[in-house]
Amino acid sequence: MSKNPTSDIDLFSSAAMADPYYLYAELRRAGGAVWLPRIEMWAVSRHADVMAVLQNDQVYTSSSGVTLNPEVNTFTGNVITTDRPLHTKLRSLVAEQLMPAALKKLSEKIEAEADALVERLVGLGQFDAVQDLSWHLPLTVVTDLVGVPPSYGKRLIEFAEIMFDWAGPPGYPITEAAVKRLPETQELRAHLTDRKNLRLGSMGMALFEAADRGDIEAWRAPLLMMDYLGPSLDTTIAGTGSAIWLFANNQSQWDSLRGDPTRVGAAVDEALRLESPIQYFSRVANSDQSIDGTTIAAGDRVLVMYGSANRDSAKWPSADSMDISRGGLGGQLAFGAGIHSCAGRNLAKAEISALLRALLKRVKAFRITDAQRRQAYVMRSFAHLQVEVVPV
Image 1 (tube, rainbow, N blue to C red):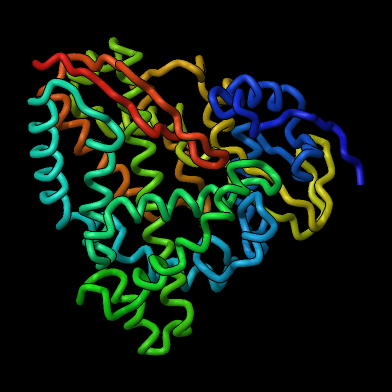
Image 2 (cartoon, rainbow, N blue to C red):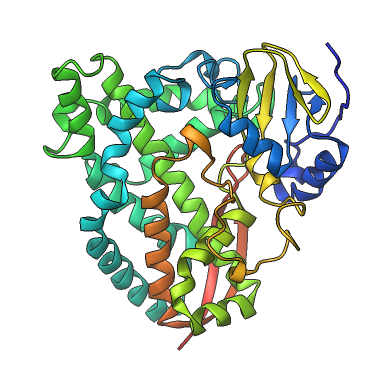
């Protein structure tokens, strides 16, 4: 098997976590598929190639796991780690209550929660855009939808963080630290997935009722609940924090959005394009394939680089610059593409959009006084983002 082109780039160093984009550009220049001996995967980093892999799910499969960690990849059977036709059946159960029509009745609640929160925070003059702002809607809306007790609060976020960190490459310090913390997640996982603790009429309870009807195996119901909780929390929080950071550093774009708030949806897409919450997952080729003249052998694992694809200048002119006038950005890949595109994308965009609309009415400018990125391999986000606001 040819291992060329190859690169010894370390995507998981401290420098890479701080700013991975110059490394992504180097990989895009090197080829459509570049062998990374450090993690024994092919890096697919160009937009066209990432899109092709994601849309060809019957060749680049998910049933062997989608993370960078072989141990994690042995735990399969939920929506993200199944292939068709099982994937179609499971996704329909999870996604049914996350479609636009189903979420429409939630829109007033989301907007009201966002408006009240932003009014209070702007009144303070300064706040943490992560822990004070970004956490609120995922923890109030998602926990209510899924039906778990809201008292779990920060423990839910910690749980999701550990799960994402565990998905990183083995042998690296953040991954190994997550492994040491796994025991503390077991009690919480048991409580979260115990139907006795779920609210009647919730999405979580609906999964157990599907098992009662025989639609799915009983063991799969608690597993599918994690498809709601993990991605619905961390990714939305990361996207919100990054949006505030981007607007603080691109005042003209905030001014432009204040002049035309109808472009909030496009602005959210642009923020997610520039700072994709999930930077990469993986797939396994089930037959020999060719990407840009390089042979991907059957059984090889491919690193699907959403964060790089979204910065590809072959797709986006001035790709590293923020420009909310790009439009709806149907090709941005922060939510993935194909059958495994994020089922919760509509909810995530609704929450981020509601917060931005509430801020647009009250804030002329953001001034960052302290920004601390969370040290993580798969997820790109802030741990703290202290901002001062210039009120309208």
